[in-house]
Length: 321
Image (tube, rainbow, N blue to C red; front, side, top):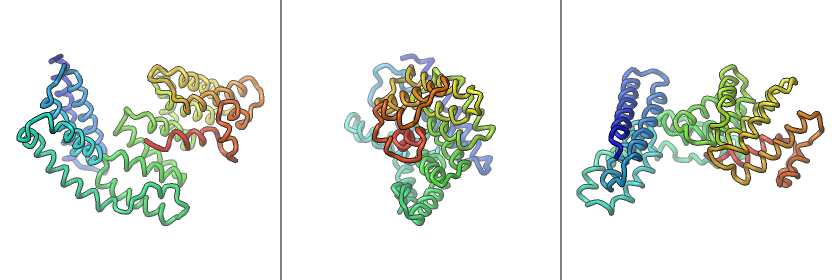
């Protein structure tokens, strides 16, 4: 075991939890979300600390999961806590019943309370209403999600639904607030960050543009999906001098060559299509979206009218997170 690293990880988690507790005590309109973000950071710190253990026992794993789960509950996220409870149940056969009950009693009691609080709040909340033609269904989803999110500001799944609702309503400011919360609560997930990059083209506030430039500055560190959607945004921001188009080509090349992971087959097709279009534009040649789609195995999408390549990519790649 790397004891200094392990102890350092636990100290980091403790410091984050202390900061979050103080923030909640101070109060304020954003205290719940900001504290939840710190508790989620603490959960990841607890997990990283456990990862340095060599051949940990089932009991050590049990204790670590309980700490992580407690962070999620303190961070207003019973959905992530539910994942932890499931992992704990999988460990149950590996320890004695007395040990399991003793180690998980507090977590289980609070988790059961939070689970009971969740169910009435989300009753009638069907994410399928996002694409429903019924205005009433979409309004009900927004209202139900907002109530649940006010009670559980650390639940990134609720912020994601709120982002989707705001996006469909073209309320770009509200969509930005929601997707930013998702990214801060779970910074390791790629799709929300990609959707935040895509949203810059709609919002175009100084803060959003600064965010896009910050992503551009760390292209080699981005996953292929983030780099792809950043390339869409940079191209949309071009003012005619081709500076942004050149940056977009850099981004789409980074998407194709990302050291984080290889692009999926679906991502690769959109990467190639956008690269084709960007190269043509920069060379002063004509290249229609339809032509690019047919050339890169996206012929079915060419049958869709009046859309941008980014819309097609978002519909296929960016709906689940």
